[in-house]
Image (cartoon, rainbow, N blue to C red; front, top):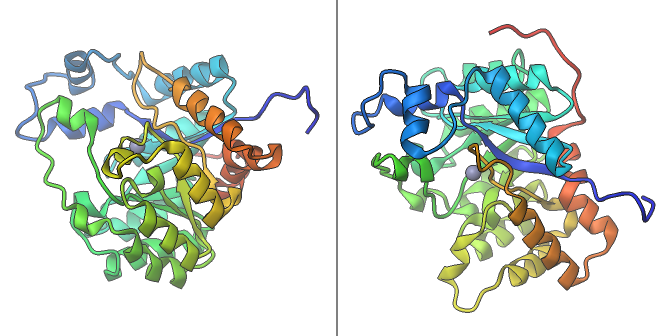
Length: 314
Ligand SMILES: [Zn+2]
């Protein structure tokens, strides 16, 4: 990399709030009444309606261009919405890696995971044990990992505190059992599938020590740096710079993925997260190679190189 070349940015953690996402939320009996959930729910939140997945994909690309972001991981953020993200990836294969939430306890989970990784061209299945109430050593989780291994794909496992802002804002109940998101419980399944990159977001969202222990034991465990990392409030005096320093000491820069946790419009891409984290890495004195790994290169390794358009029809 020459000095004049700007730092590449790939964002490993964004949410694709499609029409299908809002339609699923609207099925909750506690949801506000909506004739057209994809319009009425965003309106209730003060957000822009997503339109068709292709339109939302175009808006994302314009937003990434505006901020100089190369690629983004877009997550289908309810089970069953993988076709929306697949449509976005098919439209802009050089810009998006598709991630999809899977509830592994659903009877069709393995079939959905295999279709997501295969036919739909998505790169990572996202598990939320606290939300869907399963243990990480359950056979249903192994089935998702096996599917990921067969397709050379990754698995994201949300650990630690979980609060879903959109649910809270809509007044939807969240009966999460955060005890199920212990990073140490990721170790057996991650070790059984050493070729599957595993991502624990937000440095373990409160379980920093356990996340670092887990990653020390299983070399395929990565962390993402996404969101404001408000969980640091649980440890007296803990600063995000300390978190980065410790993660670098245990994992090295190769297993840390920058993420912003951007989700809705008009807010768009959360530039302030990137600025804050860049400043921290500057303060820590991480070299250019390390910064390039965190902000761009690890993304390409974990999610694969930018794809080319493939045949996909919804
Ligand atoms: Zn997120």
